[in-house]
Length: 184
Length: 284
Image 1 (tube, chains in turn purple, red):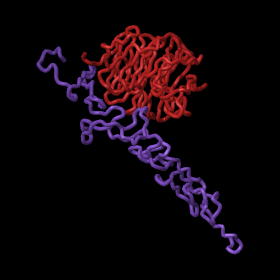
Image 2 (spheres, chains in turn red, brown):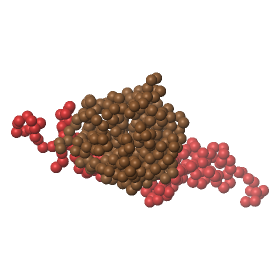
Image 3 (spheres, chains in turn cyan, blue):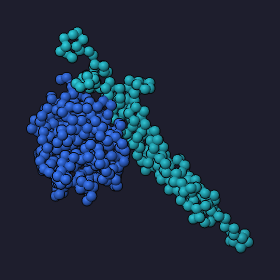
Image 4 (cartoon, chains in turn yellow, brown):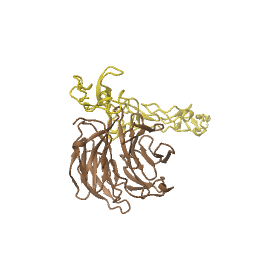
């Protein structure tokens, strides 16, 4: 308050060097008004949208605000792409998931880090008849669905040689063909 | 000038969001009184995306994505109050029907458009199909329409429906990129959008469909608002409050550069008086 007439009327802003502050009239609270790029908050202690870190070391070792690190699996036109403090990615695209959008989401497999979006994560598409408990998830990397007994193929869509009746939903049954009467 | 927090003086103002605050620029006619620009509200721990103004009670509404919520504060002074905080994930665009006393918003993670009365009650989902990245939303209570954008990179579109979500149809789908901003001038009923993909501002009369390019080669528009024949938009790259753009002369006539260099989001007009008109809901 520059009108009080005391030597301490004006005190330095509790903000990073050279930046301005203001007093909220109602609450008398001091807020920084011109935080450095990428930072915001009452004391420039938070990161802006699209950035993460802990610039003043509030709850972890101090780290400057950096752009969200989401393995190129976020859209720059989206808002709120990562948690401003931890950096956890919140809006993964291309069917990716995980803290850094670095793995395929459930029900998808492949390489989330592939350069071309078309090569990233593909749907498991497990065959409902051949898969244990009609599961829709597969191995994240290979895409192998968990097959019922004597069922084969990545997506559990066929019976092993010498077996039949995939549609049973209990696995494939042996053909039990007579070795003498069959052609092979 | 010493930044401060003040109730808005009388007159018409631009209100826009910059992550931890909502700022205003008074308008003198169509001119921005840039040296009188000030923060109206400090919300230091929030990231405000959408802003809307209730011209009846002189209240600002906004969406926040950090603790996903919709809040309001009176411009006569008064504490910010959270209106809705449950079952939201990424609320972005917000629009007010000042006649029906309702608000509409988009949520880009739930892929929904919802409505509630201005106190947050009587909440209802209006649209929950066929949305990928819904963002801007506009209400035209006098004619009874909603308009919204979806910046889905595979199939961006601008859609409309009645204010109850019925009679939904696509207005624009060709030659669109990232339609981030949308506005409607209540007097001329001209619908205009700002596109960060085509880098254009375009307008059309929704009932006639005479689409026109108003501005080309802009940088990265986010929000846009119409006032008379002028348009004002925010830009992520220039980090300025571009405009006003005179929608008849196709020229950018002025720009305002806030002192803090960070992204600007939603922008709206705080009218000195409500646009005239009434609708069915206002008398029911």
